[in-house]
Amino acid sequence: MLARLKKIDIAPEPEATEPTKPGFVGFVAPISAPVQKTRGDPVAANDPTIQVQAPPDDRTTAALDPDRWSWPHSDAMTGTEIDRFTARLVRFNGKGLSQTDGEALADKLVTRDRESDDRRLCLECTHLAGYAGMWSCRNWQWAGVAINARDARLPGELVRLLQRCEGFNA
Image (tube, rainbow, N blue to C red):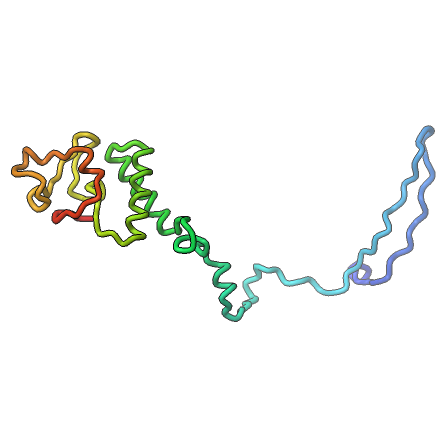
């Protein structure tokens, strides 16, 4: 059977059959297309026994880089920036910000990081305690936001403001 598949010659075509049912108007005949096998089985692309070493090429490296069209070549976020954005959004939502406000702040921080701005949000600090509207700073002495612990409550505008804080801890 295998020898017959490897033959290059095309088998002769049988003639079309005559109609068998009354009222049938067509003929049935095979399609004449050469079916031949001229070489052995090609090697599968995912075959582990084959190791293809391509020479290093800038175009190949660029094609494999998913961030090749991202910042700084465009305004699109890189994969790392997207991961940071998502983590910040989860943190901000966990502290009581709405989805819209959280996205706006996380986007603002992407711009801050790109510009190498050293200011921070209270929402990024580990010393921020509480939930939306009831925030307080647990490092109020170093931060200089209060005179005593009772006054360490923070207004929402301050928590969302980029600032330099001596008591900040990431």
